[in-house]
Amino acid sequence: MLPTLPPDLDRDRLPSHVAVIMDGNGRWAQQRGLPRVAGHRQGAKTLKELLHCCKDWGIGSLTAYAFSTENWCRPTEEVNFLMLLFERLLRQEVAEMQREGVRISFIGDLSALPDTLQREVRRAIVATANNQTVQFNLAVNYGSRAELTQVCRQIVEKVRQGNLNSSEVTESLIAQYLNPSNLPDPDLLIRTSGEIRLSNFLLWQLAYTELYFTDTLWPDFDRAAFHQALLAYQGRD
Ligand code: IPE
Ligand code: IPE
Ligand code: MG
Image (cartoon, rainbow, N blue to C red; front, side):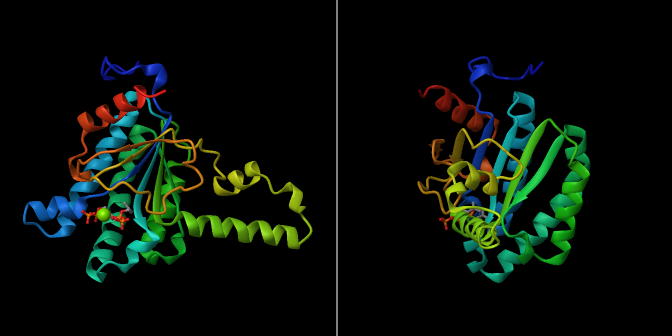
């Protein structure tokens, strides 16, 4: 039973995998005369709420873009704040993820993250590995071009070692390398804050995904806003 699904949504046509580009934290804070980091703090709450919502409404997978390979170019203070925020959230939220049946995984080059954050990442992955209600995939130091380049390297190396013929390099092989945990491609991508671009997010995986753009800033993207996105999704062919 998923009692809280809004009655105007069709349970049988919900996306099974939603991806989000969480944008607009800085502007949200600026509008309130607050430092940008206050927007990130609020944005983290929004993400938690969206995760709850996925669980309540029976949406099995959520992928969220938290930090891009380009985001290292932001002021050091902001980058450091974000790294500490990720670390603290992972530490604090694992117990809740256990209760809610959330299994966390990551995409992106985690080796560049602070050691203390890497430790929390590993801990959270192991702790939640057997949960089955919601698959939560967090993109940290993620860039789609870097990801595809990495896959090319791995495949070239396999061919070089004589373990793969070039004729065996197919779309499905590349998809397997991109997505070892076999998550289906996203059915719906949401980007907040009025920007209409992909910013190097899941370029391969979004080939057939419905795209939804909203002016709402990420910290304001609440259940009602998600409901609207799902209605728009269900209104399409
Ligand atoms: C998105 O919000 C969060 C991250 C990229 C970490 P922004 O920080 O990009 O907010 P704006 O776009 O400056 O408003
Ligand atoms: C995209 O937001 C990346 C994340 C949400 C993590 P940005 O605000 O960094 O993207 P651009 O720079 O506007 O394209
Ligand atoms: Mg932005």
